[in-house]
Length: 467
Image (cartoon, rainbow, N blue to C red; front, side, top):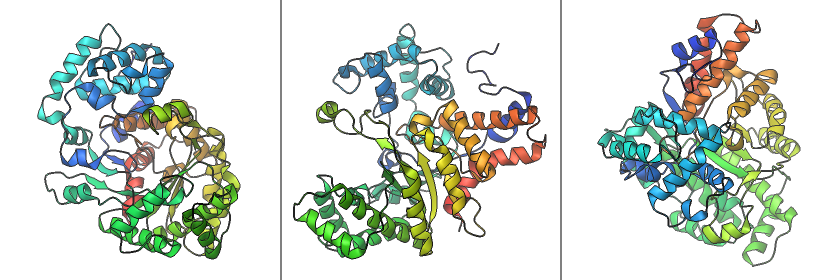
């Protein structure tokens, strides 16, 4: 029987252990998609206590606390930081089987040297130990990045952002990790949202184009893509609740755009047509800059209207949807391919039933000299657990080329979430190790170790940065 979280955690065979120790253990991190605030990195934000570092903004934890019956006052309300921490400690013992149970204890062990299990009985002691260390200079924002050996961080940024802190970090010779902006044009794509017009006004303020026309919007977006590129941006990201695609002419999109600005209600078909046109135009802009386009498909967001009105959107009330990805995704990628304008693209699905769809779709589009141009992204959000990651990698291997996979990302707002890369690497090593032990793969350790290094770091670095 193994001990919980021992050095061979998640590694079931001697081959898996060897792969992890020789190839994965000290590998640097290329975290190409997250939601960290670059201002906090620039300012090297200190944290007064573990709640501020660990629970603020973490909707993964908020959801499970609510499912444990914790009142909202102790989650996003006015309870003290210690009361919120104690509420989390009360929840953790019930999370065996949830990756949060593993991540919680991996983070306590890796960053704070704490090997006790978090519970109501240990909460006070762990609170004091963590907070004492958080007063030390190496326990500020940059320290966690440096301790984790992070070489690249891709943040998520609105096109209207001035990227001030990315610029400051780029010019800071004391900080060596690359912090690159990622272009997230939700404000332009979701024409049906009440905030659409106010977002257009912001775009007009930061670009040299009036955004009250479709041409103005397109020119403004193109200018912002160029601005992001000048400031290190090499990727975009998109929230795609349902992957519908309808080939739409510019005149049709212009009519829909003008109708929206005149205050008229748009039909679902018109919304799909406009979004299809704009997403295609954006894809062409990305291809011109040789960017990576990321499509996150299948989330149903803000399901609880009462709580959205009470505490705001994106606070932990999202879930897995039916993205209907197959036909729409095929038509969208093909429309770009027909114009020789398909960028490198990573496809993420929230519903695991779509694994085979994405793993198969990858092989339909390629570019000579670019291994894995279309990627099936790692297990995302409701899939970034052991079963989800194993399923994603095995489905990718079954119908694609696992060795070209760009690997893991944190998709997180926390400076402690880099342990998720270690979690992923252990699962990867275990899959490969088991295949060797079962006679399903040759015992060629030199090749397999290089494969682990490539999936764990090298492939992502090449995919995002080398041209």
